[in-house]
Image (spheres, rainbow, N blue to C red):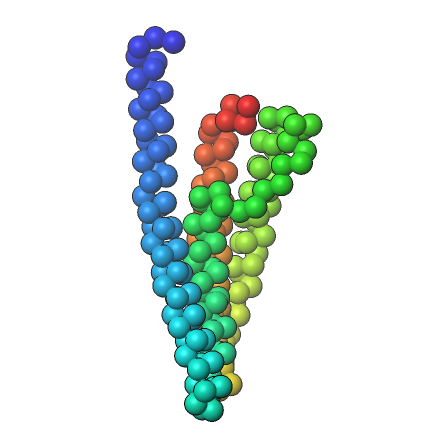
Amino acid sequence: MGRRSQEIVLHQSDKWERARVIPGRILKVLAAVSGVVLFGIMCLVTYSVFRRYIMNDPILGDTEIVQIGMALVVMLAMPHATNAGAHIQVDVLDRRIGAWGRYLGDLLARGIGAYVLILLIQKTWAKALDAHEYGDVTNMIELPVSLAYGAITLGMGIYAIVLMVQLAFQLASGVKNYE
């Protein structure tokens, strides 16, 4: 490979790397927000237990706040976990299926995952709109249920985008990264 070819390849890889950095930072911010919400939930649960068992004065609606908060925690952290490759992977068959098998398996997993998420996004978005239209609220403190559906829809949407971007990068790089 000549010097000019190497420069083109390096420039192309720099573009790919830059294309990964900005979304990665955004996903880290979302994961940090998820962590802050989780910390808030932990504080609420601790205070709620103290009030319930020590003061004999439970907090009204604490479970509802925890439920909606956990929807935020999971759905905001999931895209970052996927982007960082932090999901559990079972590599029992890796040696037997080889580089092409792993490549095709990842293609299928990302493609099917993105497709299923798109279907789920359509359903949860419709449910969020219905909940908003009918004014659905939680039982105790009347938090809008559409908030939880909105958080779930947003998280799944970002997750689907991450999977599709990974799929595009995988297709662009080919099987060479699997050897």
